[in-house]
Amino acid sequence: MRRPPPTAATLLAAALALAAPAAAVAQALPGIALERALARSLGVGVGDTVTVGTAPGTGRAMRVEAVYAPPPDPVSLIRRERRVRLHLPDLAALLGAPDRVDRLGVRVRGAATPESVAARLNAAAFGYHAWDARAIAARSSRTFEVVSRFHRAIGVITIVASAVFLLCIMLLKVEERRLDAAVMRFIGVRRRTIFGALLLEATVVAAVGAALGVAFAWVAGAATNLFYQRFFDTSVVFSLVTREIVAFGAALSLGLGVAAGALAALRLVRTPPMTLWGRG
Image (spheres, rainbow, N blue to C red):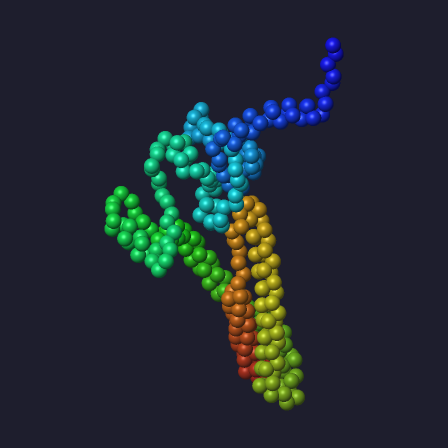
């Protein structure tokens, strides 16, 4: 007797029956969370199975339960570390060292301060040392403090060089006005008026330069963040232009510009008209 051909419902039921054991095995595997950059480099995603071990040939199959983006941390960028997160029992079984940790975090609640809790923990027993978050941040930020001081030194040198360059530019610009100043002196224009006109011109030039400098800094900072955030796959801000920096830069630019213009204008108005005309 000839059997009837299988229907679509029969084929679907058979496929589900075969897939059920595989799904049960995948659900039984311990879960693991991968850092986004690591998951991207390995080409895996949520639901995939990976082998994790401390040495070749000692791996254990685990199922990727989550892919997470780590919090912004400049220290991890320097070390170029890639991290995974496991449940504590799975990690202890993988390392073969149950009831043992290298470090752990404690969140303080209530009116207690982290410093007081750390002091009480350190006095309670030995074999470990408790640090509050500020102390850990200070210890891990020493490299960045050195880099910050280096950048500050570069900034001071740049400001000094810019001031000298600006003074030279203003002196040259004022020297181009020697004949104009001589003519104005001959027709009776007072020195104060000439000085004010030159000072106003220097102020306008300094203000325009400050505006262009702020715009350039903003564009350069945005380009720097865009490049390095994509390169390191992080949300760390590498270049930050704050209101304080803009205010300091604008004030410094205006101050140096006005000072350089005042010195150049003062030198010009104190020169005799015949000398300015080239006959002195």
